[in-house]
Amino acid sequence: MAGTITSRTAAQILVDALKIHGVDTAFCVPGESYLAVLDALYDARDSIRLVVARQDGGAAYMAEAWAKVTGRPGICFVTRGPGATNASIGVHTAMQDSTPLILFIGQVPGEFSDRESFQEMDYRHMFGPMAKWVAQIDRPERMHEYVSHAFHLAMSGRPGPVVLALPEDMLTQTAAVADVSPYQIVQASPSSGDMDKLGRMLERARQPLVILGGTVWTREACRDLQAFAESSGLPVACSFRFQDLFDNRHAHYAGDVGIGINPRLAERVRNADLLLVIGARLGEMTTGAYTLVEPPRPKQKLVHVHAGAEELGRVYQGELLINSGMPQIAAALKNLKVDGGAWKTWREQARAEYLAWTKPAPNPGKVQLAEIVAWLRDRLPEDAIIANGAGNFAGWISRFYRYPGLRTQVAPTNGSMGYGVPAGVAAKVAHPERVVVSVNGDGDFLMNGQELATAVQYELPIVFIVVNNGMYGTIRMHQEREYPARVYGTALVNPDFAALARAYGASGETVEETAQFAPAFERAIKAAEATGKPALIEVRIDPQAITTSTTLDAIRARALKG
Image (cartoon, rainbow, N blue to C red; front, side, top):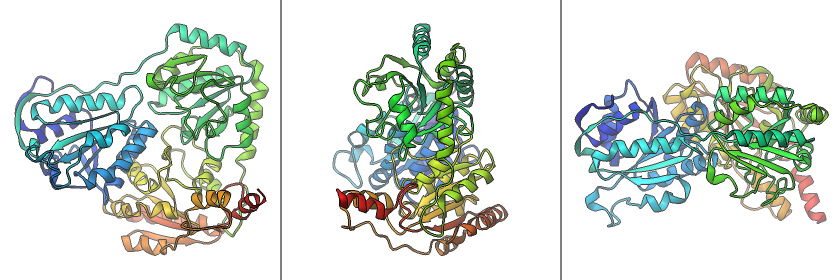
């Protein structure tokens, strides 16, 4: 409680601060540089669950994914030097994905600083470009101040990562300090003038399109946005890997604007006379490498709404720029009255094109990946969580799965491989009552496949799917496009993934044709539920099935023709 004054070590103050700010889960790889914090967490083990990962990058991914599926800051502890550098991948992901993450790093004792002592690094320089704030806490009496600022900064405006270094000797020093109050989320709101101008712009539009993205969404905000789309008749698309912001089954949903975009939707983005972009940064993946929406002055009239004022006008000039949190803009839009009669046909055509695009399309080989994804789409409960890493395999999920609502998708917008396994772990830790399916490529899986051991240790009944084509598929695709018939450095010799899973203590099966998948998945679910352990299904696909719409041979042939 605020006002209480007790004498505690800095480590104890830190753990008390975490409890005050609502932390009930933290991820880590232990290190001697923050033993005092581990000891304080021991006393808090009934209120803060500590999940120990097998590699610091996996721990950081878990914290980032946990934040995605809860809407609260992910907490991660790692040791100095190698621990911090491993964890940097999670910080980069959190920055590009606008995810609230607080990374605590054990640091060398203050008396050894600036000597390049064992594993010493300057974290301000290291993390400065990839975090919202980086600091080192040198005095125990300032612990609450720094931690409070970290939570406020991570969750306010455009959310993102904060990094705090903890000198080892500081953690054992004592201070008599008063506790603080929990952090508050600070977000801007649109002005009445903004909404009036937006209403006038919509009245003049004939081919408008809404593109949703970003974080700081809530379930209520998504409901308000859906109500606005229904009352105004607007078609809605979602930016790269934010497909769960709008019910994909809804008649107003037009598809995702990202890698492997429906060509017809791409044309609609180009031909829109008004783009209402809410929450998305309009980065490279969402804009088709800045071709669908051209900087700095788009051909379309652009209304850009974003929680971070620094993002508005950064790349694109707009007709109207609105600094607002998502709940605030969604509530205002819900009350905006717009007659959508002028674009009814435009919206209905967009929906029809989406439905046609998401019908399973055949690929070479005995395993039809689109049919498998469509089966999962029809089989999984509405609140199931799909986690995936990065690679061409993810194109089948993006195209053929239909996300029903907020926080059913956990994927890295920065295209970070190795994300799917730890993300699946984090999702199941956060929501043990929900079905979690983690989909990975073969190269993708082996970048953090050791976290399968974490899933086994904590008895997390996750279903892991490994799509195995024996290569780094995305790079091979680009290789064939740019340097056809000169394959080098992209082939993989893989283990038997099902046997590997069994070695970890999970169940494992191999699928080599489409008909085998459904019964294998049903057995995996039953085994996971019965044992409390994860299950893995290796799906072996033809290497020619390189994307949802083409083959390796076709890419090579086009490239050789010049």
